[in-house]
Structures are given as C-alpha cells and as structure tokens.
Amino acid sequence: MSRIGILGGTFNPIHNGHIQMAEYSHDAAKLDKVILMPTFVPPHKGSTNLVSCEHRLNMCRLACLNLPYAEVSDFEIKLEGKSYTYRTLELLKSQNKNDEFFFIVGADMFLSMQNWKNPEIIFELATVIAIPRDKDSVSELKEHYNNVLKKMGAKAIVLKDSVLTVSSTYIRDNIDNQSALQSLIDSRVYNYIKKNNLYRV
Image (cartoon, rainbow, N blue to C red; front, side):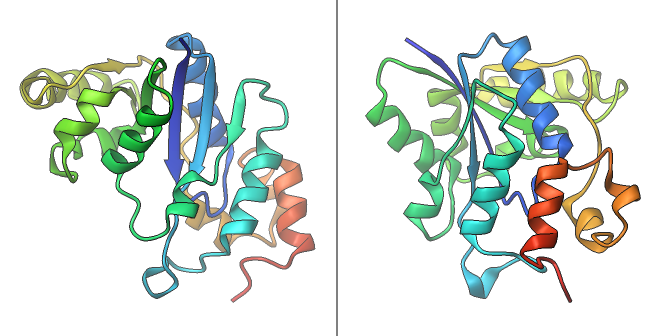
C-alpha cells in the first residue's frame, strides 16, 4: 500500500510555492509519492492568459526534475470537462484500491471545502493536507476543521509551517523581469517559457 499525495491546480505556470507544497507534504505526511495534476480548463472558460495543457504539463515535469518521489499526471486533462475533485478521487481509488490518498490544499481552499461539489465523497476517499498561509492561520485552519469539516467526515492534517507565497499571475505579469522571478520559479521553467514565447499579451 502506498501513501499518495495529489496536488492539483492550473499550474499556469508552476512556481516554487507549488514545489514547496509538494516537498513539505511529502516529508510531513511521509508520502511515498506526490502527483502533480494540472486541471483541464475548457478554452471558453479559460483563465487569463492560460497556455495549452501540453505546455503546463511540460513545465510541471521540468519543475519536478529534482523530486524523485514526484510525478506529473495528465489524468484530469484526459477527462476533459470541469475537474471535480470528488470524481478524480473516485476514479483514482477504483484503479488503486489498496493505496491511501492525501489531497494537498492551501489555506484558502481548505476554508472553502465544505462548499465544493460532493465534499463528503472527497473526505471519504482522501485525507486532506492543509498548508497555512502564515503562522497566524494555523489556528484558523484547525478551528475550521474541528467546527465544520470534521463534522462532515473529513480527516485532515494541518501543517504548522507555511510555504513561499507567490501567485502565477504575478509571474505572468513579470515574465520579462528575470531578476524579480529568480527565487519564485525554477530556472528550467523560466527558460521554457521564454523559449516558447509564453504569456505574451
């Protein structure tokens, strides 16, 4: 039986905050594997300056080259349509019955999980790993778990440390300012963006 973490997102582009979430979750929850899973976003619903699924997968693969326990999956992209977490977990569990799943989220997502589609199914199929935005938010996350999510059947691990806070929007908006992005994005990802002329207005 393997302990498998799932980290989803548009990854448009992937940045060092995402990588730190994968590393921290792997170490803290003793995961065997962390799967980065870019979501499929239909063109008519796309977020600002969204690049193709292929580019987002390639950037994730480059960013994970130094993480031997990480893999990148096109699972949700192949499903197409809206990416619902409960559906993804149902399919993954049906294919990997003996594995234990952990769903990795940031603070804002954790605080809204009760409003997701079929949250009870998510809580039945996976333990949630919540990463605080800062030291002060740890108690807020624990309180939300005890007062709301636990009553819905959730199992959760609230980690005590935060990770690098950076938005993909900031990276897209500053793609020509390499020095501003040096500590925020993997150099291989940055070079890929420049080589493929991504995030040009």
